[in-house]
Image (cartoon, rainbow, N blue to C red; front, side, top):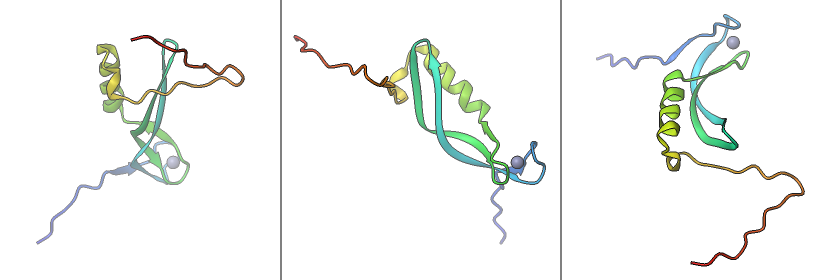
Length: 93
Ligand SMILES: [Zn+2]
């Protein structure tokens, strides 16, 4: 019995020598003034030259999520600018 698992890799279009493998790497994008951080985002990475290509389906999926306003599903991380630390003020309520 030969159960074949489809090899999820293809030849790198950049160097033609390496293979593109599906990996999960951080993905950053700006949405207006907000920096959206996705800690684990599917991307194709070449094992030779290191070319990265984010999964187009995942990118469009993320865009749909963001456009729909469901930002809670992705991790948001505010970038702190050196020297301008925001101190949380006491809030009522
Ligand atoms: Zn390559």
